[in-house]
Image 1 (tube, helix red, strand yellow):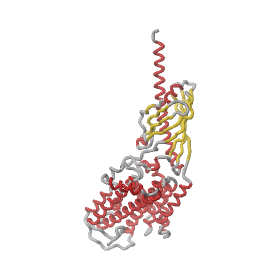
Image 2 (cartoon, one colour; image 1 turned 60 degrees about the horizontal axis):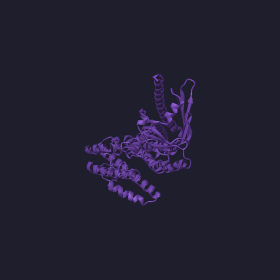
Image 3 (cartoon, helix red, strand yellow; image 1 turned 180 degrees about the horizontal axis):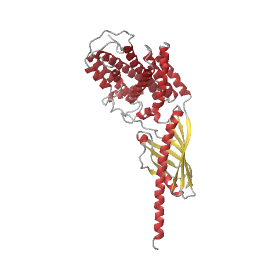
Image 4 (cartoon, one colour; image 1 turned 90 degrees about the vertical axis):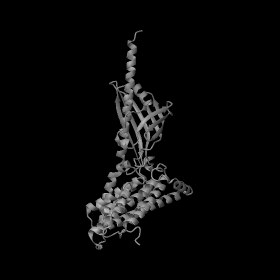
Length: 464
């Protein structure tokens, strides 16, 4: 009997359908257990009738020490990946039996479309068996190696994110540079190990591995669309570098176990991030000129109220944006509550100089974003604590023209690397949020200033 994990041979439609559906059920049950160990938000989305399973699983996990919990999660992730491999192997053998393209077999492991791929391969009639082609036939070796290489690369990416990002909370060079390089290298090496498939095909297979891995992360609700979209440029470039390295290694007929070497090398790369985690502190400042007096501007800043203008598109996709602010009390020590789209920031006033300066330190930040996912909000680890606002300072300066300049300066810290890559994203988001806040203060101050001037004019002309 052919092994469940083997890519060689053929398989009939009904054995294929039964085995594949059983694996899909097991796969989603394991993914459900992994996810609901961290959040219950998917309890009615993935498998609504699995509440008893979840209760049993949580009871078992509650009896494990922290190290045991991490090992249990790692074991479950390994089982999910093993089921993916088996699904791909079954689909590959079924595609061979029906003379379908082996690219169609890849659908069997992609969330959202895998059931379509399974049903399609099931309803297709078996093709007559043909004389096996020699092992050296380029077409057969090419397709087989391409699919296996793509799965190997995607597997490395999912393992890296699950173990090092989800469990250990490491977001640095290891995750965003080393991992895509190793994904591309493994995919390209496997695709080229039986014969050179060329630079273009090597790169395409590496990028297919990245795409498949990304779909897997989204399908298991481990990452959202916006985060993956923001990381796409650096991941694609690094995967292309890996593809070229993998092809070179395969052409040299050396390091034939490079996929396993990559997996072994990952912990050492992430250990570097753990010992010297990425960290950057930076300051930004924005100013706006307001056609109102300094007291009117001060009143607008102290009594912020709700911001009615709609945020721009990126913030509508999940990035945090300010909605309103309230200061409880007055003077140094007063507490300011800044309500964002993702939660509330609590701040303490450190400088209170009416009509001149207002400063505060941030005691707690809301999450920097809400991940966009088919499953609704998901609690990915990097959205909280990896980007922080340290303090904020308002400066009010009357100008000779009779207007007032309002300046907002803030300090921030970023603990996601490479910081040179992520800093422009952070600065752009901060810049957009500040402009929106300052525009709100301007409109509010000018409106109040106009009302005050109108009231004074009305009082001056009224009869005594």
